[in-house]
Length: 133
Image (tube, rainbow, N blue to C red):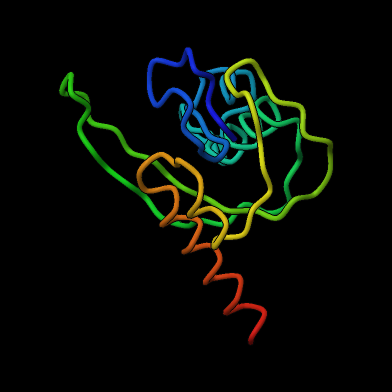
């Protein structure tokens, strides 16, 4: 997906669906324990994919985690997952202006946010190793 040109971070860059955990993703569900909720990350990611693209995906598979410190000193952890398409037609939200289905080789020709190409290549390698098994 190509981010809107008016986005504060990475305007016009290409990326993959994602976003942050919101309290509404779990707070209204029964707790799994004392103030704990299982699968909140998965629910949040499915919501973000649906909101940003209109698509539904199959099982979410962990890919990699990334940690960094923002310029304002706040630590951030990113959890990256991959999934196969399940259903739906692409319908972008207001934060994105274009989309493309591309191979990992074709992705090299897009102005991607740093690190996204590496994640696409990791996913491609995993899927190739599964199909070769």
